[in-house]
Image (tube, helix red, strand yellow):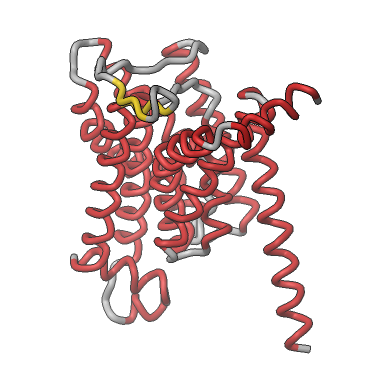
Length: 303
């Protein structure tokens, strides 16, 4: 308790520490938001709650790390991970997801949970259980007499995440496939009546989600660490963000991602880095309780 109290008092004695925590939270939270946006697509369009979301992220990170180990520059690992995970997402849709998409919620959750376990075990067998990261070798910027350090690698990661998110938004808004995806999300039956191949839309959406996660993982390995069994924490973060923001609410997804990133950094500072993952679980419980309370009030107002 004394250590926790000391960490809290440090925030008031040196306000610049708050700025450092918020900046770190925003930089890592932007990557959380990127992965969550992919989940929001799959959830909103296909009504699939993908429990393997975080494992897609970790898989993308290992693809980039493996390439770097063989001499490929880490920045090139991001588009390569995007393309590889696109193909992997298409394969998973054709083999697993298309068979359970019209089933009940429990079947979908069970299928994606099994997929998450399979991916984690395969990554563990291939690369081992040690944590991995990629050092870009870039310098660090220092501000306020060295109290705040901003690694250039993190700035590049935020820029790449923002570029990818912007590209996806433009694609969804102006391309024919993007319009088909939005039409299918609004009304599946009406989209079929209008001649939209919903199976093709589902396949494309799930592949795009896997590709976004792959790119996010390739960026995360440059600014953070990955490990085969870290996927569950990224999945929890994605569910927290989407549940808090709501489906189809991109500004809300971005805001929730940045907010959760900042809250986790504050929690790590106050309670210790070992509690950072526990904070994500706690946030999920809080968001679910709030949503349940809101739904209960809505039902009462209708009665």
